[in-house]
Length: 478
Image 1: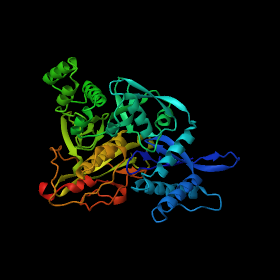
Image 2: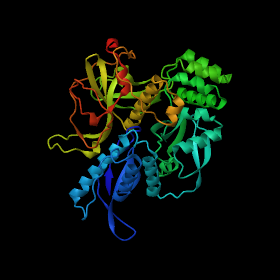
Image 3: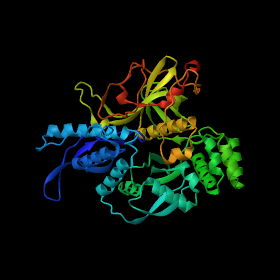
Image 4: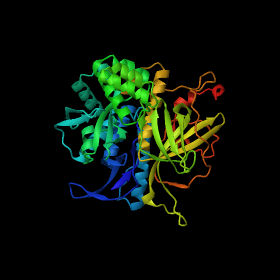
């Protein structure tokens, strides 16, 4: 089996794993090489070269020869091990190029190929089933769907079961979560258009994995639109109560007393309005992890919300510090799978492999700095950053969040000296300049053109995920 790694543009959660080769037996008795495509470390589908070639031909027929990237050529004879690895690398680059293309990557041809391949690989026949989707308060919603229903189909089925008006569906999304032993849960990923939710959750064969319905926007002003409808109000209320009970929202004693009073009166709208004034309302909180800021090896709790990543850092001295990094001041970011070099031999130790999110942050007018987070949830953090950028760009261009949520928009705003900057709260102290040498084992997110940088750790445009929201910062505001 040959495993591939992929980071797509719109939803950077697919990646090819470290290569491993294995031959498979075909129905005719022959052997062939298969390529495993993983989603967040879990097998999504297994495909053959011929299947990828058919996908390529479909894309060329629909969008033209000049749009589709070059596809690895066929070989007349059996491939040698080195040629198998070369083809794996070529197919990896091809799939990355397709996924990162704003037209090809969001095309129904490409996404339906991934969905069909997922179903075939997991050997789940098309049939009607009952799927459990959870709400923030733990309530279960059972919907009748087909195993072949895609994410949007399942979301619409849940909305219909809840009597959520069609105009509000775009404000919500389905997320894959994993329950913890202490009753908590962690976010794995937002379910994407290229996957089948039923297949994704059942193929994990673990009851701890569930699908949950949550709002999918960051600007709390959109709450007003959702609260106009009874079901929308109930969903927001359940999520606000849950987040407060889990400690995701910061509440003092007086605020807690007021919230409990509103709960007793079942004053849901007033409850949400009070919750909106609280720190970390609407944020997603991640599991404790490690960062190199402000010092290497610091423990940190990262939260995403209000167009920022918030750090609650525990320094080696046991001192606690807090700071925020605005998405508008992130020039770019990348997700990498990496291992430290071992002492002496330089050979990587696979047991120490880790997933990292690194972003380049505009500390001051002339200083960009890379900040790294080592976390199993690094890809989910990247998804949050991307959705914040999408929301900012759509809002800036006068678009609708409803359209943005149902069908991702590609927006471009060029930098102008007259544009206003979004002020960022003070960040933490400067980190230690020494960085641990890292062996990069897989490809990183690749996205759009990147402006020049004076950063000592600058990398090429092909290695990073560029941020158009960064282009809106005016020099006069830094």
